[in-house]
Length: 82
Image (cartoon, rainbow, N blue to C red; front, top):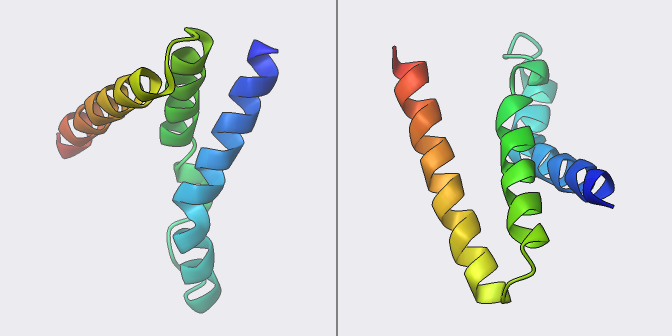
């Protein structure tokens, strides 16, 4: 069940984070391909799956997920800046 939940969460984040790129690729075929953006949705899906597997109250899951997402965003920002 954990792997199914991870796959579904990652797929949802992949679609959410790449919808804008799909539409921009239709307008500009020379735009950056979608294949460059696999890691952030996978990591966010993993974070949500881990927060969900703890079986704590929904509010605490949401707070934990937001904290993890902010940390991941900050890490990507720091490493992509270099």
